[in-house]
Structure formats: C-alpha cells, structure tokens
Length: 133
Image 1 (tube, rainbow, N blue to C red):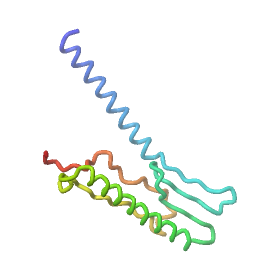
Image 2 (cartoon, rainbow, N blue to C red; image 1 turned 180 degrees about the vertical axis):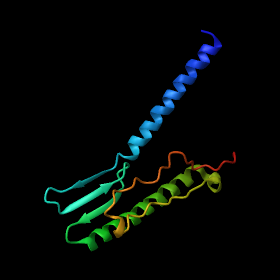
Image 3 (cartoon, one colour; image 1 turned 180 degrees about the horizontal axis):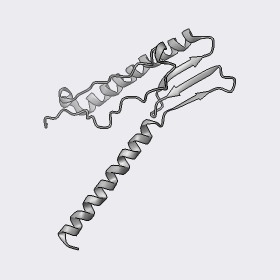
Image 4 (spheres, rainbow, N blue to C red; image 1 turned 30 degrees about the vertical axis):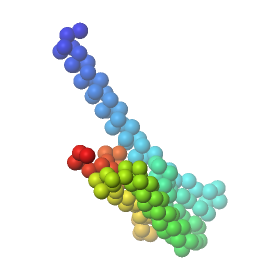
C-alpha cells in the first residue's frame, strides 16, 4: 500500500466515523420520551439523560408546577455537589476549572403545548480552561 493509498483509506474511514458520530448525535438528541398513564391522568417528558423536563397532572397543574420546580432545585443541588466533589479531587487546580453547572428550567406553562426540547448538549464542552497547567 502506498502512502497515498493509506492516506485516502484513512480519510475515508475518518469521514465515515464523522458521519456515524453525527447520526448518533441526532438520534441521541431525539431519544427523550413522553409517557402517559393508562387513565391519562399523568404525563411525563424526560430528556435523553432521564432528566424530568415536563410533568402534567390532570386537574392539578399547580402540583405539577411545584414538582417541576422542586426537581429543578434538586438537579441544581446535585450538580453543585458533583462540582464540589470534583474540586476536592483536583485540589489546587480548582481555580482553573470552568464549573458552570447551569441546569435547564422546566418549560413555561405557555410552552407546555409544544414538544419538549432536549437538554443542552455538553459533549463539546470541557471542565478545563484552555490554559495548560
């Protein structure tokens, strides 16, 4: 195999991997789901990672709103706890980390009629700043 053949083969394999990764990403973004109880009294929508995005309780929108707000607060608390534990692991380098732990809010009531949007994709983001240690 000549170097040119090897390079062409490598580029073809790389292009195929990129196409497969893009298809996987598209499929993953739409992997969330909405489920409703048999009696139609409760409907939940979850993101691909299982995070609760929407909740509808027939005849009790106020309770659904409270549960969504509480879920959001719990997710933020959990994310903060994870960052705290991670900072303990990295010790003196904690100041060099990008530790934004923003958590998506549940949809506003006027948006609940629309299909749920997937959570923000963090796969291209890093917890490390660009500077080297």
